[in-house]
Image 1 (cartoon, rainbow, N blue to C red):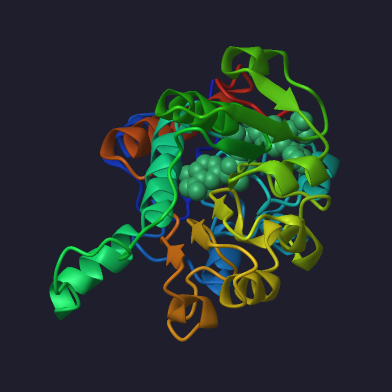
Image 2: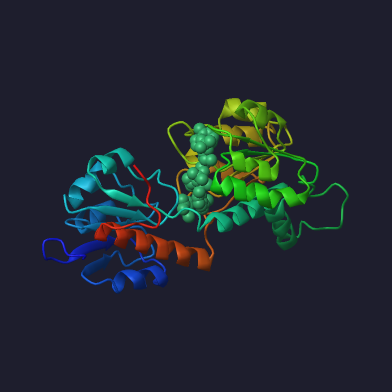
Length: 329
Ligand code: NDP
Ligand code: DGY
């Protein structure tokens, strides 16, 4: 059962989450749920207070779960469930050391995130935000042969950095646009790449031969700052760079330099450092940079299903049974 030494199991949820997931938690017997009842992130001091004595923690990618938070929670804590597939906000070594189980939300957000990434790629390559702006500000004077031209996917070479669940779903969606070659790089060749005729290549080959470079790897010490000056300098001047993984994979100063100097053609970012990106950030002054506010998985149904999975992971961990999506540490 869900009793710990005859007492209620305490659960802390760090934000308002979709009702589908909240219902599951609220109806769990022997489970006392408290919530940071807001749409904004819980301040660290509040988190440290609220997590005290918790058996379960349902958190978001905006919450840094480090040794300080785990120590504040204390020895009751047996499960952390994050409402995300990314887990770079979690101190995995500290979690493992304490014997805490970890749940996350892979697969259920793959399609939504891949769709958004394709939308961002097309919006960036075909300059949609610029065009919309020109319609509104009177810059649209007439149809002009050389105005607002961009780059098309047909006949192009696409390079995917990190052909995992989302990278593969992006590749599958791009191929029907008439992509000629699909390159990918990562630590290991993927058997499933055959479905998109993917060629496993060294990352230098990928960046120098691709017309579109899409980043969909996880953020790790190895991928932090991976997209830097050295990488941008190997890209074509016509290259379109897209990142929907984590902001820290990109060195933003180097990206700014590459975009403003014409080293590459354009960039589309769904993720930045920091988030939110300050409204006076230099990248936001560039017409050839499209920045979205981390909305990859933001469809109503996907967020609902993510919340259900996160709730089920949490309850499984509390009960000491199977978690539908446990990250093995
Ligand atoms: P996966 O684990 O399936 O894919 C991650 C991929 O990253 C793997 O294929 C892995 O390849 C690759 N990778 C790891 N290290 C490197 C490296 N050094 N160089 C190149 N590739 C590397 O995860 P998902 O596809 O489900 O999610 C990927 C990421 O997308 C998440 O970690 C998250 O950060 C981000 N994300 C962003 C969203 C958004 O809203 N924008 C929504 C959802 C996820 P290999 O094994 O060969 O190393
Ligand atoms: C994740 O899940 O890691 C995304 O960034 C948000 O859905």
